[in-house]
Image 1 (cartoon, rainbow, N blue to C red):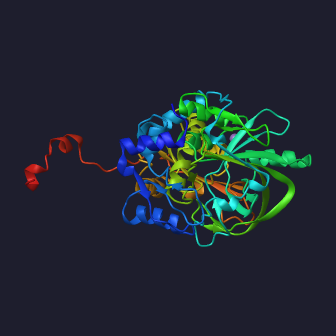
Image 2 (image 1 turned 90 degrees about the horizontal axis):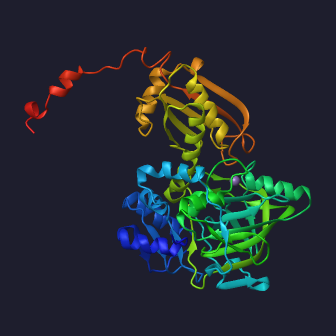
Image 3 (image 1 turned 60 degrees about the vertical axis):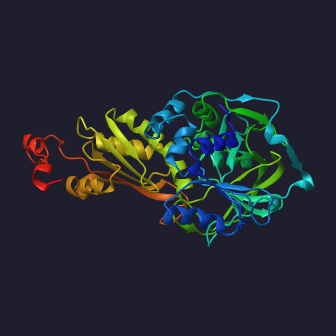
Length: 452
Ligand code: MN
């Protein structure tokens, strides 16, 4: 299977041409790319992949909204849309280690030293409050200092000079852990970023699990073959050979710079913080490279991130409650779970499993299996009619959560809560739901009474 973005795009153009929009008119990277993408979604109810061929101030075309369609993401990992979670779990259970290759299309152009100029890249401003131009589709590849594990993640990069960006490392997550370990020894941490990647690589990079789990092998599991990697120019790091572009750099120890505000998945533009500094050591790219953008905080971003989160949470709940039916992440920091509760207390265990399996999770609602968690109205009905807050809400104070939650007093230090909205003591013994007798329901044909 081809591991590059452009082959995937060709497939979409062939199989679903209405899913691919080419904009030939010149656009301004200041807000216009985001405005066009979001207006198309909200007003025209369309969410195609969009290729902006001419972007003011740069020679690179910009591709965005790649992940805004569930069927596209599913097709990328050879699954039907309703089988995505199962396909993702399979890749987590059967990861395929990557392999190193000598030649790579991403090396067609190699820029080092004075040739490095981040201002030649599209200077995309997404939302009004943003502090500057951000690179939003950069997938990091890093190796544990003095160790042998690897990590991949999305990290937003704010362009600060020709060869410098700030980097947001989520507090307490894996790359942050690597950086703190390197910094304690006074060392820089080498990190390289792939921009313009096959959606299987994007989905794999967002896998949530232990720090030892190798996202590159999950990417392989999703691709169905080993991810092909090539060595960097400025370090021993390995990066996807078929990416459109690689930015190689290192995070400097004991240096911080102003970063943000930046409009995020939370729906907020969170304020300025002091964050780590990335020094760029090389840029390599395909001769006619496509620069990928993620329309941050909108479908392109949200649809991509929820599939890996939900798969991991399903895995975690299932380890505790074998009769889990479904898991859904309907909003930031929020998880709905439905279970067929065999014995009292399992709903609480499901709450503990979710809060224990994902740093970001802050509110968990557990319902019985007769409630459809993909219907918010039903979930609200269960909370209203099966839950007594003094008995059924568990609150954990001063835990570590997302550092992008604007409601916390101190970044990332948050309370978490679980809502047990299952019927007590059991669904079978709970007040029955109203219903028309089954035999009447089945024998009535509305056409006999209402004409058509
Ligand atoms: Mn990791």
